[in-house]
Length: 577
Image (cartoon, rainbow, N blue to C red; front, top):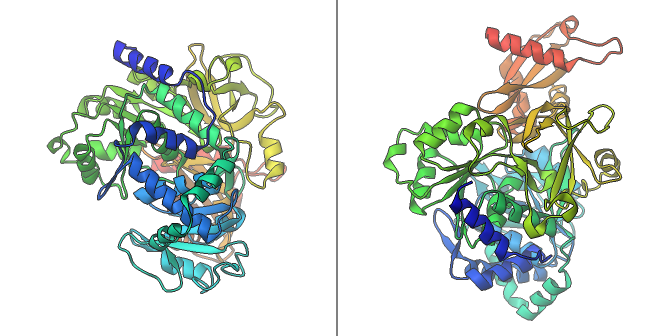
């Protein structure tokens, strides 16, 4: 660790000698007192200082109060990487409401499930995002009731939903539906004193402020409950792990709804008075232009994005002299990719990490000075938390151990097994899932991650696989059971089994083994078209193999042996099947 990096860490430790437990809203207000004139958001078409974001979020918070949103009620947020996403989140946390960010690529069925399961009383959504027209999608989802049920339940299928607000970057208006601009104007009917009173009376750092949906071990996604204090501790520990300098500017094309962006950009930069540079729709050339324009110091990405930047033919045209750091995570990046990042982008602080929504993002990060050989084979160390850490954890926010994946018993140091963790950044559990919570988290707070790994004597963690069937493609979790159940609804399918297999760029990809009903014929295209009607794009398998029932490997008790399917999938893919 060089002297400059060590000095940055010492500065961060001195800046926060004692951990002050606050809500995210109170934390942001304190930050504005110090960095009010600095830029907080540097977007493609607009720039906002900390003070401007505070003014806008306070006004929007008053609008939410006037609209009838009460403390601890749940508000779903379906939005791309616009500055308004951050402003809405801050407005929600300032009135004690709970934000439920939704993945924009979910289809109608999946969107409806999250809205119902989360008990959302309001939805704030983009009217359009790329080629997707959400105004039409939502009108269909709510059975034509869009704009007709405000205050009394929007649709019979969504009895708790009282309000839908559409945000249009082009200022389009929709009859009968409140716009984000009109919600801002509604805020002028509520006094600032009233807003401050609500913020003061909901200042509970241990209250849930986010419910973030993630795929787990069941067919449907589950809402991870995260508190203000968990998220702030995790963000500060990430600053220490990555030696964030004063004013760091972070470019990210990672979607705002994802814990990666919330923790490593939205909250991260507030501890150093830095700025975030969100990208609405990633494309290599426009990404490079944004990083050059705003003099980005840091870059959040997954391997597929980093590779596309390096392969951009116009790379040499852009001045990236301010860019020194990258955090490339979610799926492992191979050694050649790290070498190219170091040599072609001239990066000196390369980092990777390991985490999950259930641990408020990253619980493990590498150090900026780690060799690229380490980055390619390890995922980092348990993060030191400084004043935010626990004394009994050696100043860390989180502990990891390795357990037997079948019995749950602790394994000796250096053994390979399932990783389990506990700490003050670990979720309390999933929303409305008491049985799953009891199975996931034991009486001492240890959470079973489902990931296989080794904790080496030097403190570095190595991931070796997954103890559960879930796989991750381009940073998104996929549950085979959900995909299997949906493909099985196709009228020609008799049975189907889905597994994940390693992919050099995407992490994992899905492979479906399908047995058709007697006498039926089917093509790969038919199955793909069926999948696209009911599954998000990242959940659609990459490979489809039609097999006979007697070709499927079953145990004597009738259970399919999925590890054998993985072996068969790899064999067929290698052969060019």
